Length: 247
Image (cartoon, rainbow, N blue to C red; front, side):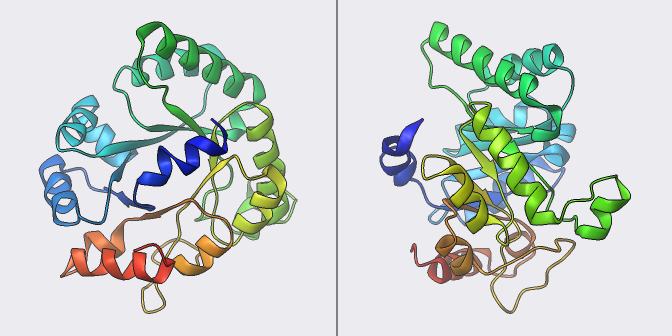
């Protein structure tokens, strides 16, 4: 992927990714359209994809958006490879895998997608690793058998993602600085859990402001409910970009 791609191709895109966390495709298209002057990439996650399937990706691409397909794939390598090959036919900009699936799973998926896209002559989907969900804290990790502090576990998995050949990572704003230091400048860092000071945290425990996230090394910021539930979504999107210093 390399720094040049971040500076050139990805650098032309708005750093604000709108998370379309709704099961209703028409509602997703409506809200995305309201903030289109501020947003180039929309996130299609499990909620929308489970409800609408591949049509959600096709429709949003038709509406002029790049798609961050956030499905956090995690299964045996052959199963994940098959899923990735099917999904890359939709030509999303990015696709997520869960680092807990292991290095073989991530390496196999990255290699298979690269080969398929090269054969088809299409842009390769960027493969993004997920480490520790922003809804988890130290107590939650201990309950599932992880005894490391949150930041230590995130950095450990971030290095595994990098060493597996993936293009970037999803990282909470509180670990972004440590992850950037651990994986270097070439990795794409995508940060959810971003709120401007007056916003509620909702169910995300590890949050920060847009400006804090960008200064820590984030390339893209993922925001959902603060925009989806706003009376003036366009105004909130602009405020987030202003706080990030990227408007």
